[in-house]
Image (cartoon, rainbow, N blue to C red):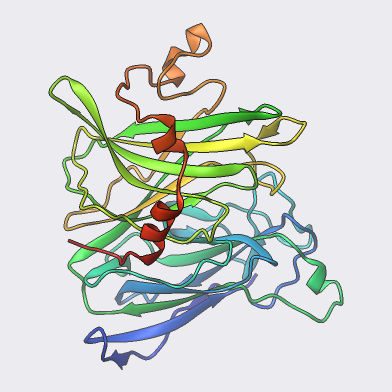
Length: 361
């Protein structure tokens, strides 16, 4: 049984930030994934006596090999092994132990797919991990797409991410809320996969970046702030993107805040060009509908970091599709944006997201 690696890097001055920072590689330790759809995890233990504040993420991966990567802060890793299979119902390597990504408290910190570039957080914003938090480990999950480069028995994989961090406390704590759905998409149809959840905590949340994720069928994913005011629901766009483009974190264009009583809603517009039903699942032949909202707060992070619905044909924003399934839908929502605004994106909108800068005010 191999112990988790320990983060131990000398701090160096970074003149651009005015901080002492360090760069740490969290990479797969030269693994050989046996089959497409394999999920591997590896973990690093953080220093027991220090707090770290993560400032940026530089991917070391290509979409030809990695379908996607996720980085979690964990109270404990899923196993004590250096590498383990962590894909639930997906392909696993029988030579490796299987286990969850994390045990105990966990938090999504970063996500990558489709050759997304480096992510640098706004000044003063950082993910806080280490000594005074419950996040004592960082765990990297890689979902492998093409494993043909490793068939020669000599080539091994080191996909992962380079982290820049500081030990200087930062005033704004970064967090991620993940919205998603289950469900099925019927053949030769365009289907909306929708979810919504309440902000139940008395905190001020500032969304500053978002990321969309589907597999092959997604055309647009949009996320919204929904506020009940003057007897009606007002919808404000947090962000939308074509998930077939690089699945990076794009800037939120407007200065939006979320407080107790607001709703966060997301829609994935899916075009099923196939002649078969496609379900939400772990493999590339399945689908996913995810909207990641990255935010900062000067308070503690939201304790509710995930928001999922059953998806179609059970859950929608605006209707009860099957009579007694009322508990699985959101029929009280009104004022829903027209489909062109919620389910389409034009070149000018794309340009605005690609060229905007991250904001933290």
